[in-house]
Amino acid sequence: MSVVNYGTREITCKIVYYGPGRSGKTTNLQHVYSQLPEARRGKMVSLATETDRTLFFDFLPLDLGTISGFATRFQLYTVPGQVYYAATRKLVLRGVDGVVFVADSQSRQLAENIESLQDLHANLADEGLDPRTLPLVMQYNKRDLPPGEISSIEDLDEMLNFRDVPYFSATAINGGGVFETLRSIASLVLSRLSAPAVKDS
Amino acid sequence: MAKESKKKAESEEAGGEFDDFMADISQEIAKRVESLDTKPKAPPVERKKTPAVPDAGLIVEWPNIADRMIEEMR
Image (cartoon, rainbow over all chains, first blue to last red; front, side, top):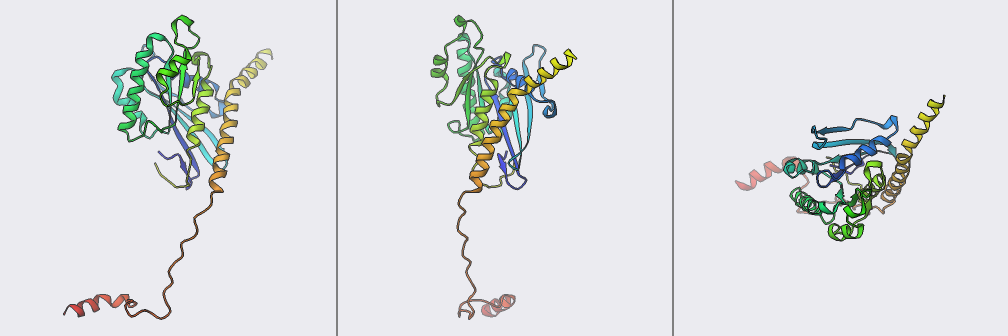
């Protein structure tokens, strides 16, 4: 996927929300969608099972209009967190420009967070992407749960944030930290816009 | 009336976070585009000019080259 196309004056960024099942990836996208002005509100594609868990993926196209002469689009995706949807996760990661890792702050979910992070690294490597350099931000979600049930931000960061990338605490269910996270990953992705080479997708 | 203004307020509130996001992103893109546009361009590659008087080894009669090669091979 091209990040910037000087030929057609387009900027397209693919951002994937990754993380274990039920960590709040879809909730992030739902909040972004709820905040979109009517005119910019396209369709959010969401395929969920009867228990509300993402079956395939969620897709939210964000058409930001023309900025500095470039038609700018962000495409937000989530992956299904459940372990057995490995093939789907790999497919969704194809051509990704940036990743938001949504971690579940609950102490009992720590192993799932680590497993999902390892899965992310393996899938990126399989796609020929360098997990050490791809734009990444961490989001520690569900901070509204009782303190006894969740790990501290410091502990989560020490255990999950190997690359020392930007991190955000969030309560995606009521929108807390959602746009801060999105702004950060968008900024990291845009900062990688470099030489005006036209690289078509 | 009250319902309408409430709806309007909700709509404005709903767009608030997105507007802030848009403002930041627009600024970021403008900055990036500007920096890309002002990057020093590589000096133009100097093209070799064909000498007015051709060298002895320089083949200038391209249409006849096949005939000349066949002639040489005989």
